[in-house]
Image (cartoon, rainbow, N blue to C red):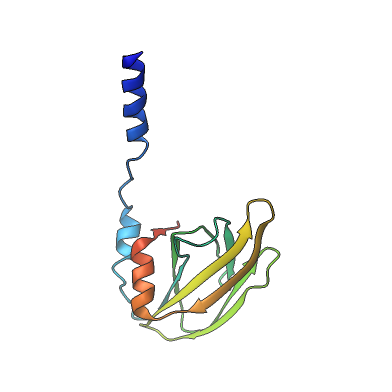
Amino acid sequence: MRRALAAFSVLLLCACVQLPPSPQDLQAKRFEAVPDKAVIYIVRQPMDSTEYGALLMDTGEQVTLFPGTFYRWEVPAGARRISGLGPWNVLYNLDVEPGRIYFLRYTVAGTPRMGPILAGLEAIGEQQGRRLVQQAELVR
């Protein structure tokens, strides 16, 4: 019985080990600008609703973000459009310039029973954006 309890305890502790960040995650957190493109970070804060939030970029990319995740999007300069996928109406337009970095916070409200109900995107400052991205995990 003691051996079983000890083995169970070891397994339980092993399940708590956090995986190291991926090379892509580490690269994205260097916050390097791209000379001929704009970089847009879209981040969900860790204390957001547990529901997913799916977005469609005007370049055709789709991304699903959960709390504590982020996405790095490199795009040509000009007018960009991000829209929500689902029952909520998220539509965000942004004019971007090459060599610049932008940060957007994506918030989703919902419940496990009803799923995502509301969502919103808002521009945030560089300091707050970097802090949130540093705490988050890159979505690939």
